Length: 266
Ligand SMILES: NC(=O)c1ccc[n+]([C@@H]2O[C@H](COP(=O)([O-])OP(=O)(O)OC[C@H]3O[C@@H](n4cnc5c(N)ncnc54)[C@H](O)[C@@H]3O)[C@@H](O)[C@H]2O)c1
Image (cartoon, rainbow, N blue to C red; front, side):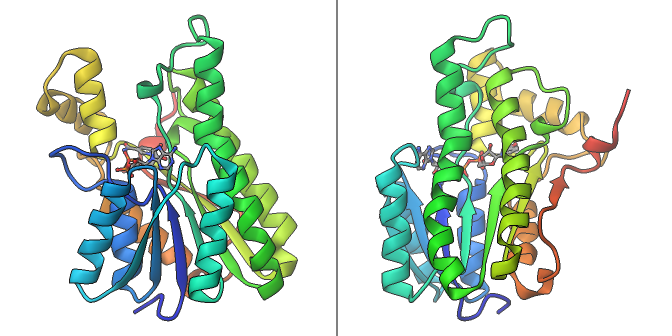
């Protein structure tokens, strides 16, 4: 019970539909709840949010589903306000929403301006605005943790410009939040997953490139020094540590969760 008595708001806390493995939003919502947090599962897809809440409550945890489009500032503000009203304050804001090739992302020579704008809005602006609204209450209570999901795309030779630039922007956002809010007792970290076996990452590529899920999964696993893709539980376990008081002296860091992929240079 490493998060006992804490409240958490997971933006994108549902799961992309499909028969693949657990996604990052669902895994982290389940993990926070298992460790004693009351979790607000906020997602654009209400069916998905409700399914995660049902899973949490069936296991004896506390959770509430919220319908939130992270592209809409009022939705984000309302999600924070509802969390504060229901749970007495927000302890952990977890920003999970992010998409790449499904938005039509492309190399810089081919990028459409509206695709680039959409990528920045979904991957970066959504996090800025969620933090904006969460910080007011966190500063008043003089405590809080913000966890932003970036990607090793931020620092590796990633081919598409929209996702790369937005995920790199999350690193700058995290550092600014950490330094500007340390005096209020608020910590902020970013997690940078590498190749994780989720529906979004594997099945979307299989669909886009006319391959099977198994082919894409094998290619991705072979490219990881540790010899396998990560799972969403690998990311959730890192988030759990960062969200807990065990990490109370850690802020402003970017933690790669990538099976050593980020160590490969040249
Ligand atoms: N899977 C990987 O290999 C990988 C690698 C690096 C980073 N990431 C990051 O992990 C995060 C989660 O990815 P995942 O593949 O595990 O997906 P996921 O299973 O966590 O699904 C994402 C959830 O976000 C929701 N969502 C999408 N747009 C939304 C919006 N506008 N408002 C509210 N909710 C919205 C979806 O409905 C879905 O439930 C993303 O930020 C992604 O960039 C994933």
